[in-house]
Length: 289
Image (cartoon, rainbow, N blue to C red; front, side):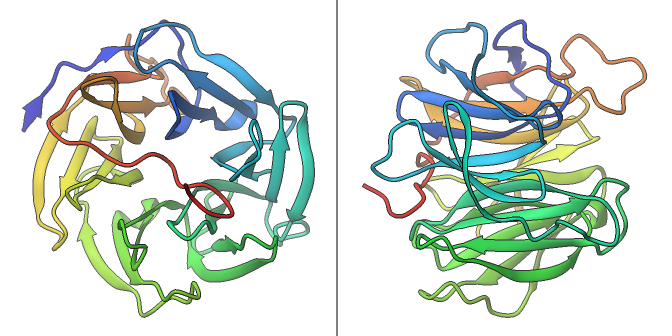
């Protein structure tokens, strides 16, 4: 196990800080339950800036190609386009009227510009969650169901493999992805025995970084699913990971205080430390430059 002595990047503390993504010179993140999209400078420590504040939970965003300050978002009970003033348009709200109250959770774009996002029950009802794919034309399709807390996903550089966690089951799955966005059979990529796999990212060496909620760790897996590295953290509930070139590569890790009776000094903090590998920026909805 490696302890990089991750230090809080700023004085902010988040209830459920998630969805870390590099976009241009910025590090984007969300605080899910407060509905806030935040911007952080990954080059200099400082407070997070609120970009958008919604009146529904905000699970994750991705920038929209050729539309500055516009994002596709997993929000509330569906997928929307956001601007600086809030929701511009709902693409779909498929979890409206579900048997148990639902919200959207994590999500990201693949290299072909499609946005993939999961949903979960507020009360953690087993198997109630689904995964949706939003295509650049705005069509939204349910592609997977039966997950309890889907987290990720993350994609290889060619977009041909998707990694997806079911946090409640401690499982990381992989799927082959066709050029049309169809998924192959589910395969078990890794089983986490202590803690729960949460947000993830594929780096430029094809390895998968995964935040391990409840265990105060980040795991790095090689493409065959072997655990290559364990990074110890001072926060109990890491939620999301993102490697940023700033100008040297740094690993940023989000964390949460929700559910903790006595949060420690680093719980809910955005943590950061130098690493020895780079990773791509967030892919954009509708295409990538």
